[in-house]
Image 1: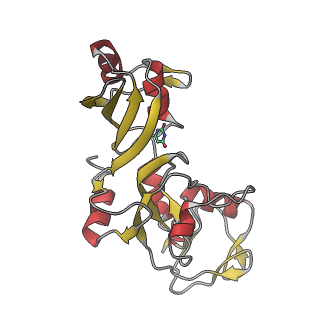
Image 2: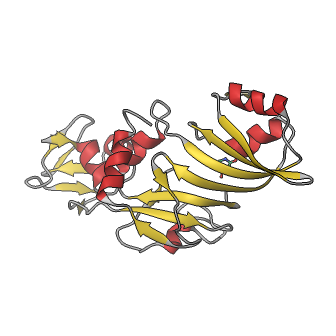
Length: 237
Ligand code: URA
């Protein structure tokens, strides 16, 4: 027997919070009875339905996508812009683990494992992510120290980042930035706060998952070992 919200999250209904909402709305039944938060069930034996439709144990899939620019991470869009999910198999339906801006490229993980998504996005476990940012100007020591120590953004202070200038051009630089948070447009805002507009942004790593040689617009399934490493992030990343 398992908690219903856990079963629903695993069956592809999104995060546990989303599953809880379905239960609270009275849309979930177990053997004909309307379920409550905290109800337990066994997916193999019980008849569990969401909006009257029987749910089945779904095969969990985990993808690494090299997100190209111009694709959005929301799964439905009133403006019909290109979506990252268009680049992956239609079934089973997957959701991105967090978001990248439309003009950001690089590592994006997608899965139908709501439970793993939930924990990887939980502020308590926020895993580290590494970005390469091409910025206007050359960051000086003061700017790098501010990023490294943490700075104040309009939605609060940032945690210390790992930061390094990898290349200095004439009027631009390539900066590597590793942060363990995932606030909206965080990297761009952090760099803007120290006077450097981001020209392009690319994520090379999410927790232990590295982009490697995966081509832009392509995806691959994560190996069992990689999925295990992501689960282990609860303890380590
Ligand atoms: N930070 C940003 O500013 N944009 C992204 O897409 C990801 C992190």
